[in-house]
Amino acid sequence: MTARLSARLPARAAVPPWALAVTAMLSVQLGSALSVGLVETIGPAGTAWLRQSLGALVFLALARPPLRDVRRRDLPALLGLGVTTGIVTIAFLAALERIPLGTVVAIEFLGPLTVAAVRSHAVRALVWPALALSGVVLLTEPWHGTVDPAGVAYAALAAVGWGVYIVLTQQVGDRFAGLGGLSLVAPVAAVTAAVVGIPQAAGHLSAGVVVTAAGLALLMPVLPFALELLALRRLTSAAFGTLMALEPAIGVLLGALVLHQRPTPTQVLGIALVVVAGAAAQRGGRRPPTDGRQVAALVHEPL
Image (cartoon, rainbow, N blue to C red; front, side, top):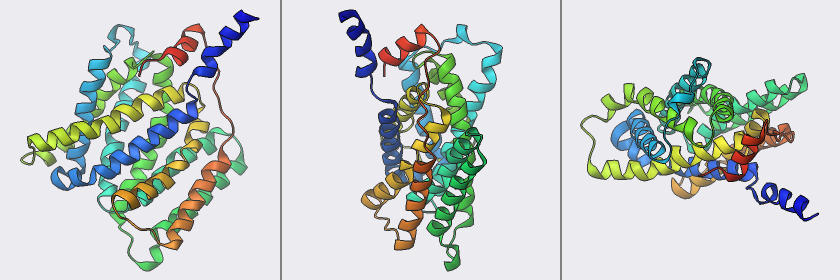
């Protein structure tokens, strides 16, 4: 009896995967809201490059890249995740430069919600992305003629990238233990962002800018990347994607508190539709570990 109880304790003591995902969302949105000033100084691509580069240095300091464990079949997921991360970060910040944070997040959320609907293999599940899309229409209020097409386009690009990111992060998380996968992916994301980011930031860098970017890099990408990797080891991509329904609401809240962006009643209704769509699409989704090593990783994973 004692042996059975002790065997169950680690599973109960482990942080629930949904808590990891929610903490990651809070970190991402707070980091996004606080990045607005930096975007004004060195541009969205410059901010993405500096944050990703400093984040990569942190991951390399925390975990040695498991280069010997990389197989040829791993390269598409590793390189794809790195490139996707760099592009999503630039697109998100470029959208944030033009439209409110809550609106950007709501549009971006269409990506993971669509992944969830497609992975469910049920035609009726497509009603949830449609409902979320109607919420986005209420958020952008195109009938007022004030829509920023470039901002919406950047947010849509981020949505596509976020959907791909969820699928690839799960693959990398299943293949590499600990933070090893992130220490491989983060430098690729930094190099991707550097292509546009270095020219944009050139001439605007200072010690204060670098210190600010270092603090923001902890909020995004370091903390959320690590937490999302852990969460995706224990949730299906469908469950993770729909759990992110909370993110648009978090974006609106932090946009109001930090950036003083006040949504209209119509926009609040739009956010509610997006959140309801995500919550309604949630279907449990806990992933069973595939072997003993993964069980150990779930319980004792270092952060």
